[in-house]
Amino acid sequence: MTHWLILPILLPAMLAAMLVLVARYHLTIQRVFSVAGSLVMLGLAIGLFWQASDGTVSLYLLGNWSAPFGIVLVADRLSTLMVLLTCVLAVPVLLYAIGSGWDERGQHFHPLFQFQLMGILGAFLTGDIFNLFVFFEVLLIASYGLMIHAGGPKRLRAGTQYVLYNLLGSTLFLFALGTIYAETGTLNMADLALRVASLDIANSSGIRVAAVMLLMVFAVKAAILPLHFWLPSSYSEAPAPVAALFAIMTKVGAYCIIRVFTLVFPPDLEITQGLFDLWLIPAALLTVALGMLGVLGAKRVDRMVAFSVIGSMGMLLAGVAVFTPTGVTAALYYAIHSTFAAAALFLLVDVIRARRGAAGVNFEVAPPIAGGALVAGMFFVAAIAMTGLPPLSGFVGKLLILDAGRASDLMWWIWGTILIGSLVAVVGFSRAGSVVFWKAHQTVDTQPENAEPEAMPTSVLPMVAIGGLLALLVALTVAAGPVTRILQATSAQLFNPTTYIAVVLTTSGKKIKDYHADDKHDTDEKGDGSLSKGESQGAESVTPAATKKDH
Image 1 (tube, rainbow, N blue to C red):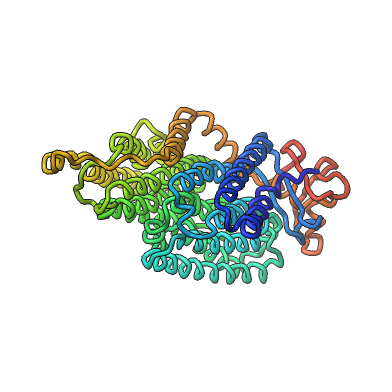
Image 2: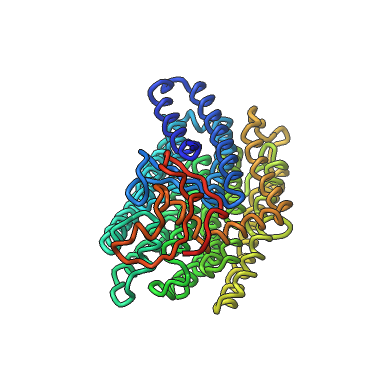
């Protein structure tokens, strides 16, 4: 029996409560415990990822209630990958917040940061679609508090817009859950996979509607056109470390699409045939076009980066929408890359804002900033990564998506949109770098002889944090081969969810067909004792070798 699986959710929840109740007025104590907790969660994430790397699917039963009746947490290759990505991102973002002083500009930054991690990690680990909704609400509440951290009318207005759009998405989510439960009588994702597969196609209109509503809900989280309106203002007005952490938020929506539409509504399911071809691929391509046009038309660096996030999500979902193992592999690689690239750019925007004085992040020529060479170099590397120029990971990810697009009937649309969008992004980022850094030196001759750039900030922690994110991009590029092989194994497990379903539904010594005997579902499962070790002790870990046949 192992309880490691619940710790990534339990630890930040307890830590956040402790920081509010015990260290509310002691910022140094909050910083120490917050950093220590994030490092511990990173260690846990590495351990869970290593455990799942051989195909093991681990299960935790809350309250020792067996599925599908109890709440379950499930760790497979995909969920542990996303947990690891979140925890890796959280450490440099937190260090930047401490080094730049953002955490002392308002109250409760560190507790909210931990609650945000709890919501994100819970969404990745839950095996129940209703609890996915619960964790959505946890991260929504925490993210609103983080967004309006340090106050200001613009930030409050952007935060209100963000909450309203996501509350609409939550309402639609509840409608979808009600419809699913009415049609199937369950909300456990593994159980849903079996029940949906056995539905009569002639009487499946309700589940079709529910699938479309779920796709729309996840599209809101992923900021896919036309449900992207909340993102540009929200991300550009949010505090820099918050916007950097939010780089993983849109990936939650992409994760949910991958999880639900490979497990519950797989590509060979006749009920939802054509859903991706008719809706998701065109929406993804339009999102790429809109995002890159926004990069070109933006008048501020922060808005430009926010629109680049929209464009990158379009590219990611273009890979997902092909709905093949190759497409999901490409999308997962691009998700890792775009998370680190977007986070680094948002932190660099804050450095630029702090050092350019009155010009801020506007596209206006201003005197050179202190440490301009280092900041310009970092911006150059991050821009190359985000626009997909060689040799960094953005170029590799884009090639993978283009290769996956060959399996689609819309191949030429996918290729044309991505390539043209990349060119537009290069022009937009080049303009930003030219105005902010290169043209700044043309103003030197017009300054008084004794004018000097402002002194460099004394804290080096912010630059270390940004450098760490850029180093992760370089490492992702160098290790592209091994990482891709890991992601290929992840995609293969997603498109063959036999082990996942068997582990979740055989926790009390029963075969899968026993759960559906009353419904006369023909599952033909050949379970054995290795799938269930007698009475469940709260958690199980099962490798693919434990299952005999596909259901």
